[in-house]
Length: 250
Image (cartoon, rainbow, N blue to C red; front, top):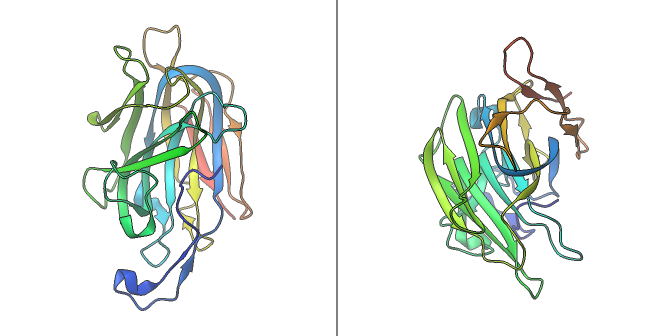
């Protein structure tokens, strides 16, 4: 799944005022876990968020530690989702820019929110927006949640501070998420991450529940879709502690 709709082009280092060699975008690579559940939201805490992602403006394609909530897949149509986390890479300078092009993107190290919708004619519309200040450090709490007062409306927050509130105007029903993915995404073979970086305290908001609850269900399924040997481990809630996903590499 190619989450970021960035044109496959070569960025010269001169764009960033540097003298490094060119970087070339690759297809998306993932180490991630997923949960199948009808849900109104999800939340997790990322430890060592962007400082655990090994990248720089010299390798400017997206490297993210993030969650995605997917909506029901429509036949013969692109996927639709909301996405929240932190990363390093080129992003649009405003969430109002649809399907941002290279000239509308600059390098960003920080929190972000994105979503993709599909219209009745099958066209996909992708948006991405930055959150807060650049170069965050330490652990951060991310939450996506349906605004149940309005149809198809979703809200996002970082560290319990409200970020984007959007109503998704597409051809589908966006009232209920069907799948939660949490993982690391990379679009450059020079990317890496601190071995053992993790996320923890994963919550979901199941349809029918009164609110968010610590996820204690079946172990999230591993989806290690990469050619770099990256993988993940799941740690369930035990002895009153928190659940966690740890990401590892050779």
